[in-house]
Image (cartoon, rainbow, N blue to C red; front, side, top):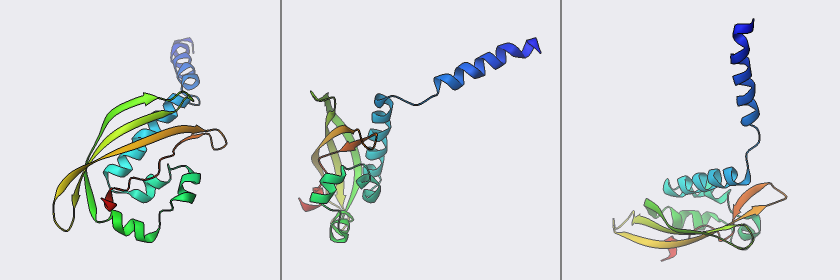
Length: 135
């Protein structure tokens, strides 16, 4: 029994260390999930990260979804990232996209403002989905 004690101690310490994550961990995950959704043209999933108040002002309508289907995202590069005074984060992102009809590639600069939403205990993006399909 005593030879298993070190193993049990290691497992117990690992369980304690893997408790609830920090806001920084949640931010890393939110940024990763959002950028992956944009990168793979899954705008409905990306919209789940948008602040509900922003979505109320700028809803993701079926028409808007159809417009977003006119482009294929080919690249998503974070150009700059800086903290805001209120504890949020602002990111400048270069998105490369191809018009699916003309096969013309171009770039679009997108701003993302992230803030911690206390009631929902998650990070939300308050600038809304990129509108590069309108360009």
